Length: 565
Image 1 (cartoon, one colour):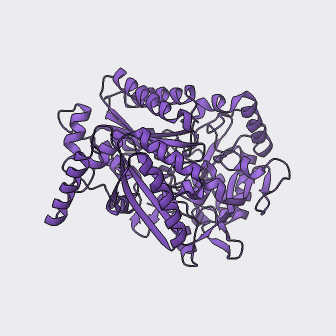
Image 2 (cartoon, one colour):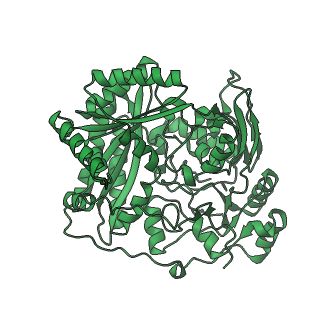
Image 3 (cartoon, one colour):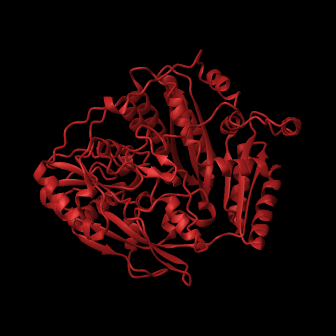
């Protein structure tokens, strides 16, 4: 088998059917409380096994591109950079949303790309787009493939003769680092670890660490308006991009490399978040920062979700902003406790039990209690000032500091939780996430409404599930809400079950003043609500951009705009 683009990291090969590396899983051996808690919560008598197919059992529809077309592709892209082999097509057929994973695990792949091309530079991208436009072949830009909203599936459209996925992983260089202006010019295919390694070696960081960091790329972050876990202090990816280059079927577009401008509407902002529907983002100049002198993570407990929300709001409006204030609601707090590793050393075990006893005695382990992870980084002086400001606000809202252990454990394991999804799917348990954002005056109401909508949708399918949430990114005027939901799968109706929950939650978000997406993007899954989000004129404006840059509609069809020419 030709594995031209087999996903590799320094640690090994990536799973084609799940999250992350083939060699990794989420260990539960030292978390004895988790399975009993989950079984009781979901009202399950026992765990069942959900088998998945082997790669040899996956049947793909044949490529629609003939030998002549593939030969032409190889002529300008290089034979080593073009593949129509099964493995390459399979691993570029879907992202990592819940419906995507259901399809992969069953081996039912309806829309694989007809070929995968790995360009080495912008010249090849330009030639490929010209070729695709002339031959009416769709192009799907691909970074790390970590989309959880159906953003990379090559959806078929009438009039298009095939689909090529354009994997940018070989365009992964840091082209320039400006230590005076604190900027770097970087190719869009660079992964999170590759980018940070290159910048760290020169004493800098981008400061952008989404949970998908290890398996996502700069171009994908920009295309989806990604948010890193430190965005409370550093901003989302759009705040880090000074300028970018987009190659569209109509030609090249370079936005200007200046810190700010009043030269009409900001073109850069119209391209960030375009999700591959306008063209291919090939590089960007990003704003970097010096590596922090100090990093400090710690845990706090609050007696209620409202207390924690008020503490974050007050901190954000005081002006001294910490790196992160991540507040779990009561249900997520309980899950976090269930997923805590049990100490093996006697002294640590006794200390943990005494700590829990004290928290309970003080009222911080009630059914309403909430956990916060507070993070600060920077210079010694800035960390001291920002931490003190945040702790004072938290103290005014009945917090209790439980020390650095919880915070440091979270920081150490923050990229591990997605592996738990595969473990749950192995036992026929639905697990998905969704997120939104709204203003402070609506946040708590929206949180309660979404939880109720999800619970009702689960109940309507005859199962008992759980929805839990955290405030993950905060602003002066509001914050985001990030939900995780788990429920027993309804056998034979797994896709319908997910669709009903998704619709109920999203309808609730739109009714209650939330945004359709804070950082996951629109993709295929959110597209039915995009008119409601943008309004008629707003949607028509974006469609006009689409017609200008992609007049034949070859760029990532079926995503974001539901565009049909």
